[in-house]
Length: 460
Image: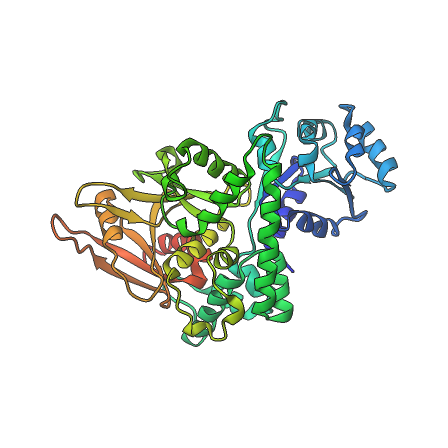
């Protein structure tokens, strides 16, 4: 399979001023596979030091002289590690997180050597370390589950992906291709983007197999709970984890999980699950301008899970029983749609930018409003509202446009791409004209590009 992050790795590898790369992401998203597969481009291939499988390898880093470290690793790994021709990959570095501090010496004294590191639950080490991090001497990359674009590639739908990449706000995807793309987006919502699930679907096209694979992945996630932190109550973690699917798209409220538990304890577990990247907190922003992250209310957080396929399995969608996706009606279809859109928007961020999601919520008597997601595209604030079907009221979107003085808003639904000029329709007060970009689910990953092209074309 091809991961779009390979292009980012190629850019990193080609830079003469590159720094050691630390790849971050949730378990089972393909971090190790990506780096090792990319390493095949090197003349002498990739030298893998798996610090979990061989903990004794950490002793090779006792010196602060990277040349001495490399000499010891060559002897232990029984292979040449040549600067400029090899990639040194420190896999499962969370088993020896103090080695992250050692990467500064590679940046300063052996910059010609390509060095990359990755590990499961690495964010725990980064958030709670007792060693000096080499600030300015390492760079980060972030890997998400496979996107819809990568799903298309894995399924051999290269031409459909090319049609998506070629569409513009003025000229969308050909009408003849819309039904097929909509069907594939619906399939992706159930299969998800976990690499193992995508690979299995590409080969077998069996929902029975996907359902079983998802259950295995979910059990693997549960098995990790004991690794989170010493003294953590794994039963409490399991309780919060089990409750998260019904909270997707909603504010995280401890009382919705267990009224008998202490609120702070459940919030701490939510933070741990966020560090494990099983859940992404969707934080509230006032959206008064850019950067959006400058005005964030950390007390208000909605829920977006790691993967739409895992979400579907957790809420009990029996994918094995699905024979006609077009006839599938879900009582939680709105949540599934919001999960899918959040996942695609999260992955559309730059490779070196930590994934995150923002929402806009107005809490006022008789005037509540909530816009599902808010994007920053350049200097523009872009509200994004998700509708599971073709129709749905846009009252909250209109309210935000009027209150923030915006001239562009996005609606995601099942209809083809369209651009129209509309006027806010609120019961009282002034009205405002704005452009409404209606985007189908299969184009959500292209949304930042479409907004930029809309601006560069002068709104046409």
